Length: 217
Image 1: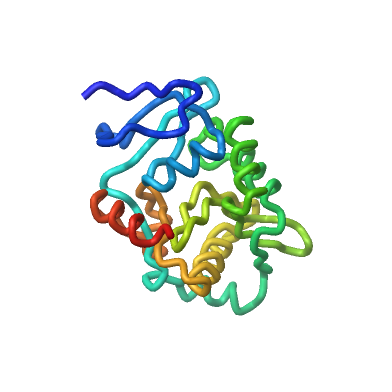
Image 2: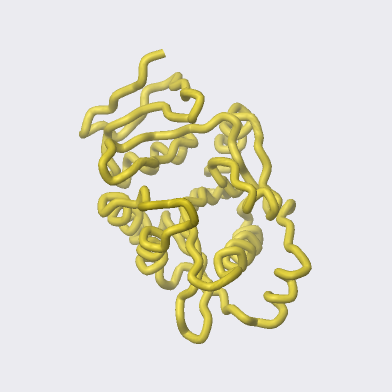
């Protein structure tokens, strides 16, 4: 099936999209608030690079975490109990996404977070849709993550760490906080061993879409 090309002014996605083996369903379009809201409601998210058009993905199977399945290792429990870090929710969103963009991970030469992506999610944050979880150490932001919160679903986008275990701490505390707010599904998008160790699992794309229909209110 041919790849869908979205027009620059399109805010929606055609029905009956079929992802390729990598989950890619469409390219083009824009990163307006309306487009991003429509995308997340359908389980679609943008991903790409600085020299690429906007690429839209809908992986099948989908990697998710049900909050009740969160695994906290003994070592992480010790870190949490020792109060090495302090957790804050959504206090420095712009700083978190900026750090996610500029803190490189092993094997990476650059970030998919472009100026356009950074500005688009800051706009979502200003509308109360994108939020951050933050790990602080001695008044310094040392780790965190951001994503999109819609209904009872949190769509995780990216995380960073400038101190050992800071991003894992922020993720654990974020999941626990969101669970307390009634969030029932954390979308982790694609498989990583790191998130699997925290309890995430692969589920069929059809199951994921059904959950979105039930949980995005």
